[in-house]
Amino acid sequence: MSGLGSATTTTNAAPAAGARSRLPSLVGAPLSDQPRHFDYADLTAFTTAVLQAVGCSATEARRVAKCLVEADARGLPSHGLLRLPLYVSSVEAGGIVPDAPMSWAHEYGATATLDAGFGFGHTAIALAIDKAGGLARTYGCAVVGVRRSTHFGMAAPWVERLAARGIVTFVLSNTGPSMAPFGSAEPLLGTNPISIGFPVDGRPPVVLDMATSAGAFGRIVAAAKNGGEIPEGWALDAAGAPTTDPEAALKGVLLPFGEHKGSGLAIAIELLAAALPGALLSHQITDIWVDPGSRMGTGHLVIAIHPGSLTGTNTYTEQATELVDRVSTSTLAAGHPAVRLPGDVERHQSDAAHEGGVALAESTTADLDRLASRFSLTRIQPIDTTHRNEAKE
Image (tube, rainbow, N blue to C red; front, side, top):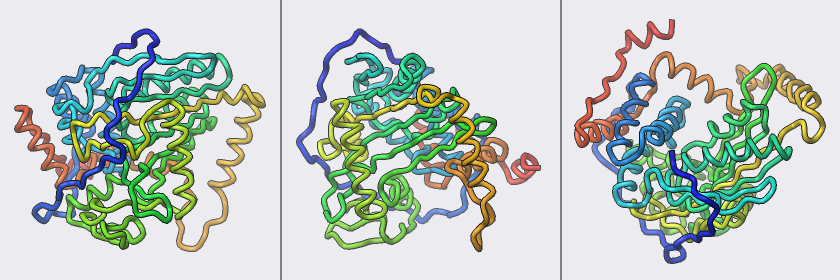
């Protein structure tokens, strides 16, 4: 785990403002659209070994590995093992610092700011989450910022971590520049995710986890690698025209969801997650997708609220349970088999993947095979169909 030093004041080393070159082509040979399934534990162990091979400690390597594999298990390959080769390249190029020394640059009352030292965002956000949870227990609520960080994977597991302790949690982050503000054709904003976790007595937490772009950047990368298309309304090409070609989208810009609504939310997250803790703004960042050696310097913000500090824990628990029950049992609209709460679909997919295997696209398995050869690791073998069917029964 990254070391924490005494409180210090540090600044980001900013690249040239607006630095953003075009991504190299990701198109390869045609790939099968049939995913193969792999054992969850095997994938986690393999990914841990790869990250250790490039200099991560066992603790940090396993933390990052679990987050990547869990994203694929939840049906979110944009944040899954598709990113492992990128992380490897970035560590080797000096963009991500493995086991970076991290220190609390600011602490005052129920607030704190972590200097992540350009280390893995997964380690930085884990420290910030734990800090926020402790402060919220003491003060009733807490705000913890992070600067000089990198991508931390999907946000849901981090808010779930505190929701499991009965704390309402917000996690916000900016990212590298890939999305245009509404009305613009310039990539000034990140896809800037927001996740909120709500504890609910007697059931899993309600977890909202979403990007502010119409489609996740990683999904576009995956579509380019697998020879697919992206939905209309996700992106503009380099000329500013709408496109469904993922290669053209990667050379252009992503679009915010809901036009001005997603754009406005992304700008607000930029101010909260980057400006407040003193991180780089998205348009000041060179993404590691573009230059693996870039030290991104992204920012995160964690807000933690202990329900008992406002109206009493019992009041919140009763109201939360009432809402969840009422929504879950509401009258179905035509063509819908059930009313789902935020996080339910991903949770069900994860449960199935733990039993029957994690589905990976052929392009991702090819990446893993290349990493196995490079680091002299045993290739992971897929679970055969018979084994998966037995696991489901």
